[in-house]
Image (cartoon, rainbow, N blue to C red; front, top):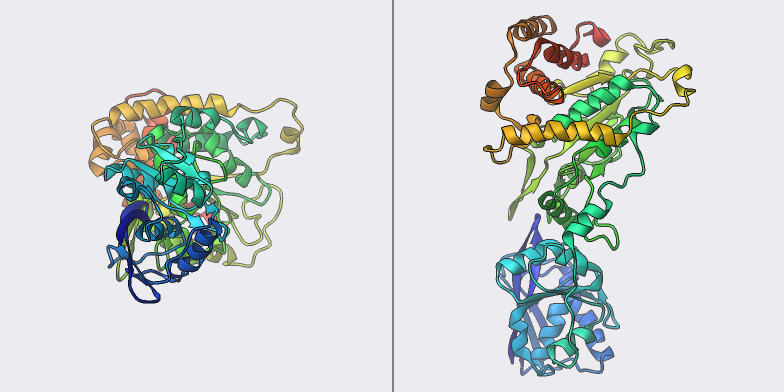
Length: 514
């Protein structure tokens, strides 16, 4: 008897429905076709054990399992459940085989029939809804994640027997109820850190406020122990909260990568990814034989923090240049080409030299002549050009550390950031895909970021003296526009340009021998 069940394969951040055809014929042996990998081929052993544990029988005749479309490679163990149900239906052990046409089902089976969690439940649910299926059956651990979009009924199961009883109409399954708004708003303002913990460093807080208000990239340069990492980790506390669309998009990426924390249905706070400097090119931008999202995609709609920037391999840093401009990364292989979203804020930190004390107000740099320039040259000029804010971090004095009063809380800073973002949202309302100043193109730059006459003269002098590139010119104008938005000014003025120029430390003449 020929039976069809439906599963789903995740490619990139989207899913493709897979038709699983199971046919029981006279003869011997089991055959699985349709480009399955080893994990899929091994499923027949797990399925046989799970079926026998449920006091049913595995066919001893010829069994053919075809996974269509046959030109797409199928990988992973998540196809166990639809194959097992197809085998039972093809061997006439299910009373309602027609019900199989209505549902997509996915899950890995244990030898006793337990259903184990899978990756990519949310994009699978979205694809099932697009193709008009009546429901989705997934492991219980993935049910809230798949149901968060409220697109179609999602049934969570923990054992193969539950699916069998459901398909035989002997025991109903209840759809998993999820309130997406409650999941989003319940935890999005809960943070373990706050800017109120930071003593001093008012100029750095100001720079990070500007970065958050305009979505700008920033690099913090200073000696060890000055507070660079502490400040960077608090940046998400002042960023605008995720809206539901952004939260679903971010959750989908984390779901595909298998990075969703246990029992979490939705990524409700902006991601903060901080990979170690030994990371590989592929781990950072994504890839592999079956391409998976990398750290820059996991930081989508959030922050990518690169601590000790010059310690990263140069090839790793250089692969970020195009994604930083295009806000997506394209992974091409011989058989497949995929796009991963990569709209992230880059925050980096670095010491100014190998010993860490170049330009220190109290300690003397012990590096050999030329070592400072050699150390800074580990980070290429084109990459630094793409970073809007170069901020020098100086150590906090003992007097500041000993003060009892606390700093300004993140909530107050976030309110100012939100007001500036609201101004930008209204300004770019007719520009799809543009939400903040860091994202604007050249046309919008000339339309909205042109300074007044005094600011134009100041910028001209800075360009000539610092020998800035055209890209650095654009970055200064964008940062000036953000500073003006924070001040509530329609016109980019002289003072806004002056402050923006201050945040180009690494372009400054004489800095580290330049």
